[in-house]
Length: 287
Image (cartoon, rainbow, N blue to C red):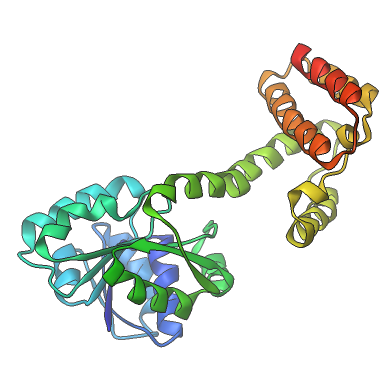
């Protein structure tokens, strides 16, 4: 099977690298940015016989599976271009790598015979090298037409740890959960970093506790891994925390919101009685 990739960014390059490494045949890659294509060439030229070109229809015409690995906002533009310039997609799999969209965004190509799908690596890609290193241990989420799922599963399990099928109507919630555990986790640590700077240290001393927490969550789940003042019913500490961030609006809002979730968890676990839960809830409500 010949695979073509549209988009020479971090996802396109790193995924292509691993596909080639695992014996899949990537035959072409396109991008409107010649600098991006040159960067892709540096990574992939020794891995296979690939045509690097700024012509998206060329990729489609010369591949059996086309992976659109552009930024989310560009997918629509690519689809419209392909619909206008290509007469038929019969026998071709057209797939995108966005976690925020279902295969519905590719629907304009359906009437011309394309088999549509999504193949989203549940991973963070801060740079190409780190992405290449982690893709083989990554779960790949797939969604699409019935006739496309078999091929999606084959490619996903060839390059990643495991393929997981997801329903079209669940794509947005799936992506939201990914943002919470990854992107907003980074935002939470950024906020923490802002605090520790005031006492003259960085985040480094906190990495062991972060790693231990993640290991506990992996073994026992988030509910059974929760510790801290709310679980202990330590009202005075909660009040002191709120006083310390009284003039930090956003951080205060984050602390209160997450503390309310932690309070719900502590109640579910039976760590605190109703009276204590109501007392903590009142403190959080007053802010």
